[in-house]
Image (cartoon, rainbow, N blue to C red; front, side):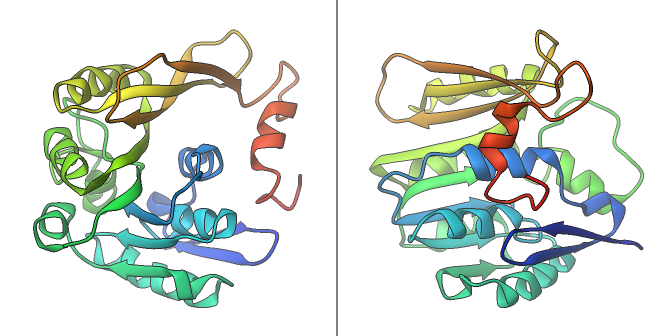
Length: 236
């Protein structure tokens, strides 16, 4: 087991194990999501607390963070305890399905970096499999819970691989959640889209679509990526 560190400008987050280390997906979601009028926020599948802490840094709202994996939850407790915004983050070691059945709360914003592989070979490590595959949280159950827990003007934002994300968008519309904002993410300018981040609303409307390349043709981070994440990376 190795240690992985993500160095915020204000403190360092710790995540143990190569399979659970900080990834670009979480950083992108935590930096991109719109926090306008987000007084109550739910982070579904919070891992070791990265996204919740990023959102707490960016807004003054209260955040509930759900993580079913006990080891990740314990690391999240450690990370949140050390961060400057710990009084606004509540951690729950529970499944989203159970939480959505039991909580009386409703949320202005729900965010998730969800399990995304639906029909693919599983990696050997069980924890990595649970983090990446949708069996523990099928997309249908994620959508059902999100629809039940949002306020009438609430929004849901998630990051997905390109193909799975477009299927999710179509299924979300059947659950009354409509794509309103989308950012297409590629490794390099003009390259294949690898990820999409999508914001859903309960109201239909036009889609605000954006594009972002992480690296330029010389292998350095693009100015757009630096601008998006500069509040978090020490190097930027």
